[in-house]
Image 1 (cartoon, rainbow, N blue to C red):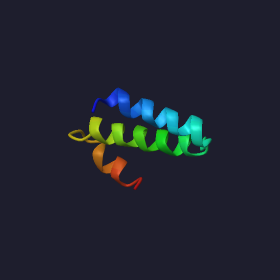
Image 2 (cartoon, one colour; image 1 turned 60 degrees about the vertical axis):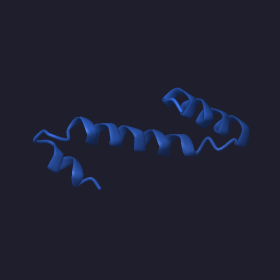
Image 3 (tube, rainbow, N blue to C red; image 1 turned 135 degrees about the horizontal axis):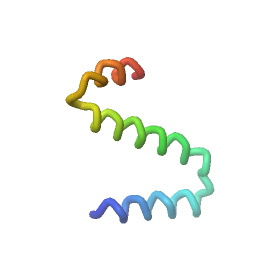
Amino acid sequence: MSKLSILAEFWEFFKVRKKWWLLPIVLLLVIFGTLMIITEGSALAPFLYTLW
């Protein structure tokens, strides 16, 4: 399954079920996950882990 199909499935879920309040939560989780992956080997990692 491709990443684009997962995004399309999420979009359909939001449209059909009208769960728009979930969108900011999902976006924040994606942003924090991306930040953790990007800064994994850098000196910023300990500071990011304190957010959790």
